[in-house]
Amino acid sequence: MSIIDRVDRLTRLAGRNRLELLLFKLQSEQVFGINVFKVREVLKCPVLRPIPHSHYQMRGVFHARGQTITVIDLAAVLGHGASKGSPDEFVIVTEYSGHVQGYLVQQVVRIVNLRWDDIKPPPAGIGSANYLTAVTTLDNQLVEILDVERVLAEIVGMDFDVSEDLLAQNIPNPEVPRRIFIADDSAVARKSMTRVMDQLGVEYELAENGLEALERLRAYAEQGPITERFAMLLSDIEMPQMDGYTLTKTLKADPNLKELYVCLHTSLSGSFNDSMANSVGANKLVAKFDPDDLAALVMSVVN
Image 1: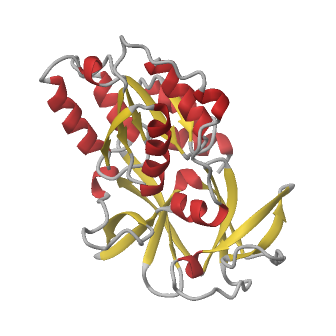
Image 2: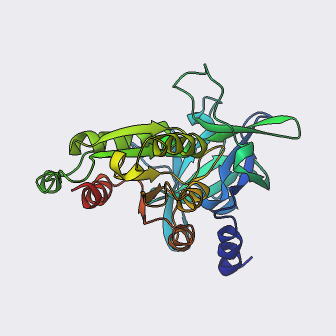
């Protein structure tokens, strides 16, 4: 399939509350999933060159298409034991949050097309140490959708601090509410965004999926103009029950919510995301996780 065909197919999913998952297995029969939007390609495991003094869960690097790609042992990250890195294993090459990296897995199963409302939050009570962002069921089997943003943050590390030069430009506008609504299912993403808001002195409310955000915003709109309560909505794209594209499209069709400024804050890479954000009526799309980019955007709205 050509790049144009792939972009056209993925674009048609925008605003329809659908996603495609690449399913794979590690060292058991448990099935895991990752959004196809984040996947560049899947390769038979090439020869990996170790990196001295690197993180113990990094298996090495290889060269492909003029680029050096680091490979993370996903089984080791999830506590399933170290992978062999043998030629019969696979590397899922991903691109998100401004990084390109490979994930070593034992078996690639297939790609499935699902509705976001079939994707549910992780079960309550599993604690905060897990790497799940959502779950679903296929053929009577649980599929665990991984929070790969958290994997990347723990291994590569991310900076959540706004630069002092930018903070010096943070002059409040008393005519605009210094309060925003945040919708994101990733604990790492919520931590990064709230850290930026705390530094800016901007209040916030949190929702963990698009449907929850929609219901709460509608309830607030019944009490008065939504723009007098919130300066903006900052929403992820990938969320269980309702994705950010569908959330935005629904808000912009609601007379009581259409004036709310919407920024889609996403780890997904690719120029087609800009056109999809525009097609559903989003005011802005900002990539995760650059604290200065996010702070500058929020300041442009609330100051």
